[in-house]
Length: 461
Image 1 (cartoon, rainbow, N blue to C red):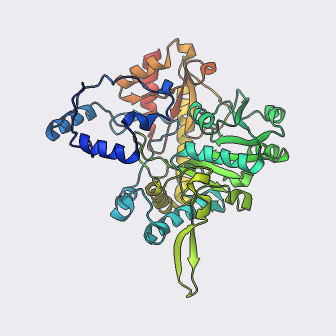
Image 2 (image 1 turned 90 degrees about the vertical axis):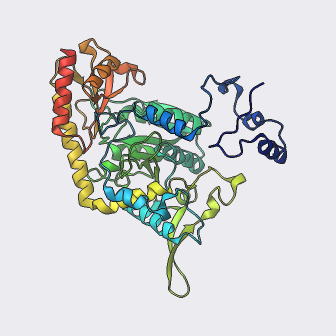
Image 3 (image 1 turned 90 degrees about the horizontal axis):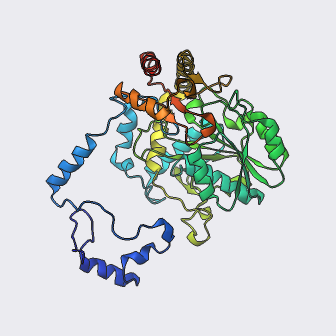
């Protein structure tokens, strides 16, 4: 029989309290709480893990010994991206989001949390200006959920169940879409081998009266800028489909906002706007739409609005709560939370600090460095930069087939040079051979890029 342990850091781990709780909800074992999880996803028996460390001082010593094994991007130069980026976080972002009235991610009651309501209203206003969109909802859990929320909206609007996406889309995002939108069908559109962008002819061949939406990433997952957005939007609308665009907000200081080339719904990841990289933390999803009833009433997020009462006094509060799971959980089209309120406020601080000129300088800086890095690496024997006719933003694909080496092997050698190499794409995109996705941001210096080129040349040649 397994010895019962009372964990000093886990509430209610005393057997008598656990039994009282189980009796209250009418179950005989904790296992009954997990019956909804399919059996093939569950591990039978106990996990082979060490016993608990019950002493606080021993636990602290153990955790610190594990943390010391980590190496951060402040110690090594990083060329990793693929959805989580090493952008500079201004000190004021941490100063503001560390304030006690903001630090909890939860939003509080509409009538009792006016400061946070105003702060999130400012977030929606700033994101609306950045996207050139009229309606912005509260941030979602992350960019992946925002994309899926947008896609599910299109199903409710059109009644259709087919999604058209680029074959170069993030495989992680596709996994989310197939799970989150499992009642819909994903169809892939070919991409041009020279630019990495969507093949318009293939899009026209595959779109039909069953297509709910055409979904694109701009910039794409592999770093190319989709410069035919107007044509993609036209094809979608001519066939009665909704045009959904996922954006990298750090690109919008120099790229046209998706609304200008016909986007109906815009989504994206907030992390580049003043959030540190973390193990799953610091993520939030952007979701915005046109100022039309069919979109507004199908966006299941909270809206934050400015109100004027009969005395002429202004205030801030949530509006149209009846659309959300907070109002009617059993009839909700999607379940949401306010746990990303902190990151919405952080993004508002970042955008307020940067302003239009700052966002323009950011985008310009990244484009210059992206092109410099691409040209520098393309000049090394054994390396080929793919999609070289496309226009890169922040990321680009480097192929090592001519070197005869695997990306995994190259990245191991780069670690010895205190460099995090690009993300290995050989499993996600086997058709690209031994390729990696390299990323540069405004934090990447010319010296960093030159050191990378020197290290790669030494490793390969």
